[in-house]
Length: 202
Image 1: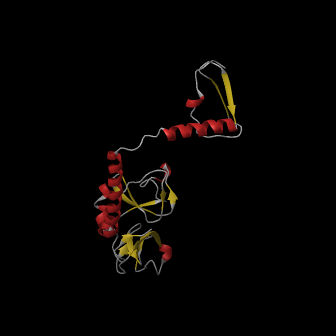
Image 2: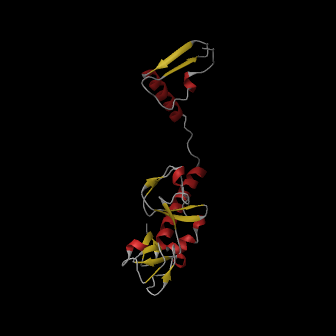
């Protein structure tokens, strides 16, 4: 092992395992080896040193934190008081999607200036990015963007959509006079929505 000038007090210990060991040279070039509880003791001492010399926040930083909390509270109230259509138009101020975050079904987040609604509970990863993951997120649609209500007299083409009983359906065949209720085998459910105000509900 080549001589080095690594010091225990500057060792960056992220994890500790029973079979882990650290080898280094002290300031006098004496070879040292730490293992097991010795590593734990060093890590605890380093943590105590950092806590002891932790720099307190400035009044400006504390004020910024207070304002951020107030903004979050105001945003929460705003979201509760607005409709989905209104929120789609103000995506720039709504909470953005973040990785490594727990999301619940119905949560709304923006990504690339588009509002999405969570379809299931999950912890976000780069594989569950809204817009790329149809399994976890659905783009929020305005009322006028939803398909028309099913018309018994209309002839539907393949893949043409309609709304029926709080669901959006896509026709699997060319058909007329066969509602999704009467002929479920000829329709595919795309998503569900709240029939009262036609907001998406996944």
